[in-house]
Length: 276
Image 1 (cartoon, rainbow, N blue to C red):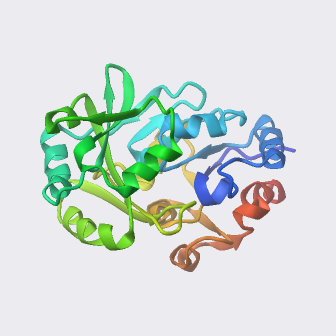
Image 2: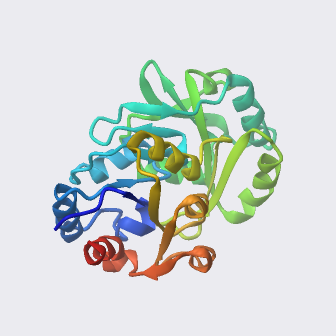
């Protein structure tokens, strides 16, 4: 098995490479590692943080940098060391967070504080979505409830998110999109279909920009990508070929080069094996 080095394959994680249990199936790990060892140029672009994605992909023998936080960071696949990062300045973060705080709800603010990634929110303004997020990540050292607005803005700021119902988030999304310095992703949660994610980062922090940076880092111009959700649309638009998994949103399927097997059928590794 030999793979050409003129094409870089980039996959989303949740709903695409990962199964419904948020894991890469053991059989898929074996298939991918065999192809990686044979020289497959393959990597990941995800909305997850490195702290969340790292433990999931650690069984894969990835060699190329990966895109995390929807493009806010490019990191090394084994250590998580940043290759590239898109930070928000304090004034920008205050302007974004103010939209939420003015309505009496706290967003989750992501920053590196004293060298550690932290997710901060105002304890007194937390809501059901935040409590669900915290329950699902019990023991996560990033969780950092704070008591003052000032504490929300510590460290190197780079991302803001909220998990809530669509009804709650839609008016907030409209206000945030009016800001000219942000990139906004609004997608339903891959595992709790009654909840949605509103995620905000710097304007140039998108999966599309992440893919463009991977081109520069790897020297590989031709991109083939895989995805399932709306935050994959920018990546689809800059790739030479783009494939939606069978369970993907219809918006992706409409612009995709083709539709492959669902995440429950290991669509991505099977496609790569047949392609190789």
